[in-house]
Image (cartoon, rainbow, N blue to C red; front, top):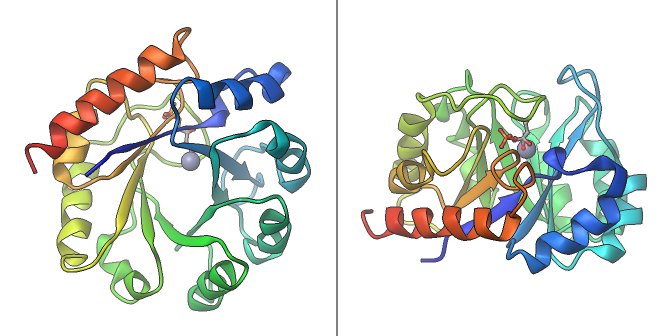
Length: 222
Ligand code: DX5
Ligand code: ZN
């Protein structure tokens, strides 16, 4: 099994986003993680479909949207128009989660559900039937550069157990770096989302290579 590395644009240089987006493909990224924040669901604001549409022609990496917003439904069609590949919505934000996830699929995107650190894995019991991936937040969402919450390891392992017998990507987001990549994968993760430990580094290619090598080491211990 191949571990995927998804650098988060949140830690990129916002003054030169077109080049950042293009260069991360050359550096070996598998997905480009886009953190969309509305200042309501999380106490921060980032970018939305208009900026993503402007950046999409520069990206050669599949676009991975993480919606940290109270009204995810309003963004789905615009994101599909931008060519976004997969979309994670927060279980805490979506009142009609089944409808939102099926809209994502109907629009031709891959649906996923994101969980805050305080949200138990058990909330996924139904939703696991409707998603292709789970995004485990290992920090409280809103900002890059926070420390990994160690209890996330147990949660990843539990979700992997709940998903046994089916194909499920488990993406882990927040505080992921060389110090914990191997352990995160060993617990059952298949995609490592990394902001500071990739875009925050001068040599992004080396940073991605290192994370991938550590991740693959974790796979061999699963
Ligand atoms: C935080 C975002 C993350 C963030 C991760 O709310 O969802 O994707 O960019 O940044 P690091 O890897 O620096 O913790
Ligand atoms: Zn994210």
